[in-house]
Amino acid sequence: MKSFIFDIDGTLLDTEAMYIKSLQAILHERGMDRPYAELATTFGIPSRDALIRLKVPEVEKVLALWGPRTQAYRETVAVYPGVKAALQQLKDAGAQLAVMTSKQKFEYERDVVGEGLADYFTQHVIAEDVAHGKPDPDGILLAMARLHADPASTIYVGDTDYDVRASQAAHVTFGFAGWNGKQPNGFTPDMTFAQPKDMLKLL
Image 1 (cartoon, rainbow, N blue to C red):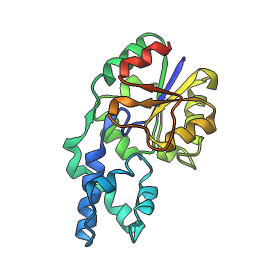
Image 2: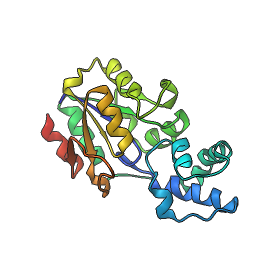
Image 3: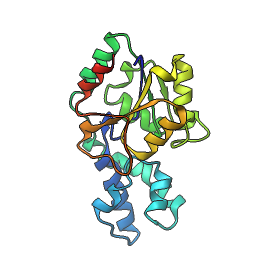
Image 4: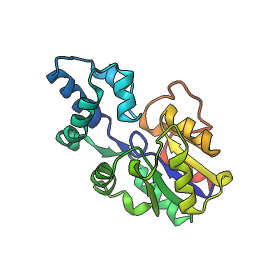
């Protein structure tokens, strides 16, 4: 593999508590008490899709509140152990690194830039860059175009069914970020990395 494209949430950054606790608080204020575990089943998929899957009423109103509310839980965000070291080693070995995420620009700057991850990547694709988000392949295809990457030597590393489907549609290998402590839910990855350093074996 020569090109590594990464998802962010649940892959490089542990952001689950930030998103789920903020949603839980918003729903509570609107008279809907939903268990954390139930809400967390949708973590990692686009926010609108998550609300629809959870059958939350007034999706657009809740969606407008959700992004700004996450700021109150920003201190819960952390880079997964071993991620920065692995990214540096991949970069030093000559691999091309990019991110492709459903995050909006303000979230990318707050979380990816804010946690010191942006400098590892030569390209990044965010929600505003594509007409269709995951599971459509647009974001991965754009990242590959910017990297001048060959699909045969490109891997997309993520953690959800949406990531798998986007990878398949873009005809690239999918690697599961198993270091996040979760098991694949409803999908079979091409490969699983128990630790970030395991990605170096692909070089």
